[in-house]
Image (spheres, rainbow, N blue to C red):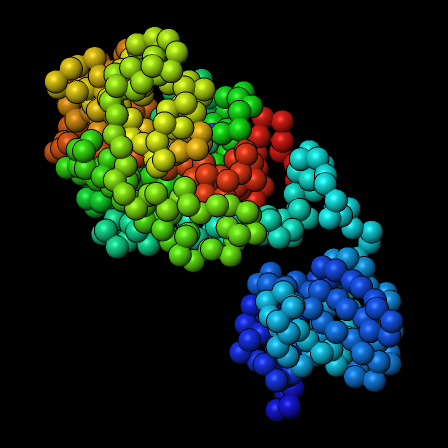
Length: 436
Ligand code: 4AD
Ligand code: MG
């Protein structure tokens, strides 16, 4: 390449090239003509910048190409970078060459308001809009922060299988598939059981993967496919994982505040309620939670899990996430350890996000004793044979251990102030949506 070829630059790094010519590759975001001057705003995934075309600054042929451009056409342009305080990002490009790559057909998403169903049918295009890009950047920060947190704490990432022979979180919401004519396989509801085995090998582990729930639920918190980060640690108690979950959420939220301020602004998300995570999270037992709900005129029955509306109420009582612990064993999963101080209760916890967002984390201490676990399987009408391997963990050096799972989309929805988890994942899978 000749040495005078301008370097290719990301729009996010234009400032570094002030006074120089650079080449930009991207898509048309906006077009405008004013007298003899043509303006176009280009986006390239890293940012936006305005290009200015003035006759005489670029070949006549290139200048004419402007008239062919449409929204979302792709192009390569070269221009000199100059400071322009009024331009988005503070810099603009004085265009010296313009080469369209693909002239876009009439783009279906206009800046006007569209319904969610219309946009979701065009999710593959909707992702290009500034708001959706901002959500994806926050999500990326969340995922990276989770991994960073666990590695700094000495947790090892262990991948757990998606195709499984058994249920983890109850049998009513399993996606079923035929496994090569050898019987049924189910899409994983949680990596937990396998993570428990990994914790007995490696001590402190976590997994990060897709998770599937087939209940026919249509709430704003429900996806049929979502991503869960799960931690599991040998010798950890309920108290230990409550602290770990609190530290994780504090770390992730502070990282988003620190690194994604601009995205929160694009989303018009007030960061003040997020900053409250710096202080300690309140903790309430299930019994205390019922009492609080009664004060609000609710009549929750002892023994039932908290419903969506009740969760919303509890999560509005505090300015930061709250840990609700020790639910009745009868409404929880088979693997939870009973509280030795009151065997009707499980050594479990849920973390509820504030502002009405509700449960973002569920976790517990696990049953460590073989006979207790066998009795639990029977109570829950779960077959023993496909779980023999899981029972082995109680036959060969069983130890107290605990873990939890964090729903990535629930956390992202809260951080971004979204009204529904469907916007927190690139391609949502919902009761009524498998397209695109
Ligand atoms: O409370 P859950 O069902 O717990 C478990 O699966 C445990 N086995 C985790 C563990 O201890 N390792 O799910 C954990 C979290 C919930 O708190 C929620 O944030 C998220 O996963 N979640 C969902 N997110 C979106 N759509 C759904 N249908 C979800 N179901 C659970
Ligand atoms: Mg739960």
